[in-house]
Image (cartoon, rainbow, N blue to C red; front, top):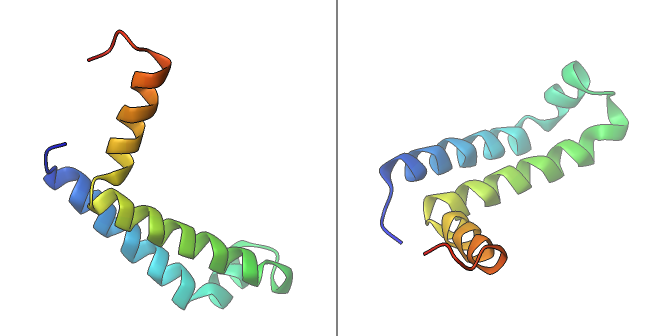
Length: 77
């Protein structure tokens, strides 16, 4: 896979959003979600978004997507 500047930037933005979700989870949960019961859910989603961002920055998401699509559709090359 080739390096993609767009994928790197999208991954960096996603990672920053995930980190901000983990940092400000109480405010997000109080204002946008149901409050106390969703604190852990907001933090979990934040960590997930940050991990997705890192994987996207290194191109691993694109590599896995191509790998799965070639298994499903073998005529693609």
